[in-house]
Length: 124
Image (cartoon, rainbow, N blue to C red; front, side, top):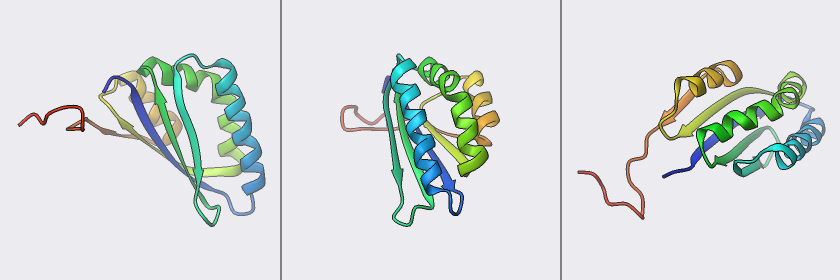
């Protein structure tokens, strides 16, 4: 499992769905134009438009750090006006630097280590 996978969960502020969508489009624009290691950045909204999941993947941990630098200002607007309760989950071992970013921008970060997959035998 060489790539870094991240899931973010957030809630959309009541009455702010349209503004949320506009700000997400800005985050997508910045990601497309500036990122060099982002391989997935998919946004999903639940049926009633109150919560969102973002599924992200990067070539390396440095890719997420790079992405963070590129979207920092636009993300601050997203959470300042349109969203709250940001939680992140990472599926990989991570550095202290990335843990600190998670603490600063998402109130912490849950870390899961790879156990087993279809392409690898279980370590028993």
